[in-house]
Image 1: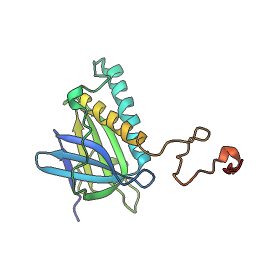
Image 2: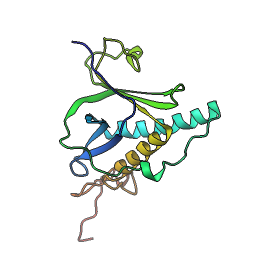
Image 3: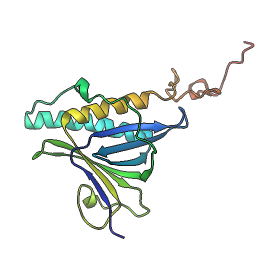
Length: 188
C-alpha cells in the first residue's frame, strides 16, 4: 500500500492536547488546515523531546543565520483551546523529524507512524512512496514557539512530581525510592 503523507503548509492550528485524567492521559498532536484535521497519538516523553528540540532548533537557526526570531510567541498565537472532537487518531507516532526550511523560513515537523521494521532515516522529510505514513507540518518561528509553550503547559498539567525523587505522585499514594520504600502511616 502506498504511503500517506498529510502535509500542512499553513496550518490554522498545530497543538498538543490530552484526553483523560492525570496519570491516565493520552497525548495527541493535532494539525488543522481549512476543514481538514489530522490527529496522531504519542507519548508524553515524545512531546517533551519535541518541545526541547524545537527550542534548540530555533536558537541554532538564530545563531547560524544571524536571524532575529521571536523568543516568546505573540499573544494572538497562544492557543489554549481544546482538541477538535471527535479525536480520531490516524496513527501512533514512532519516529519524529525536525528541520528548518530556509527558503520559506519555517520549522518543519514530521511525525512518522510506528512500524514493525526499522525506519530508514532517508524517509524522514522525504516524499518517497516507501515508508510509514506521516504528518508534515510547516510552522513559522512564532507558531513554533507558540506550539512549544502550549506543549510545556500540557506536560506540566499532569500529576505533581514528588519533591524527593521527581516521579509523579499518584492520588492513592507514592512509594518513594529515595525513602527506601518507607511510607509514614497516619498514626506516626
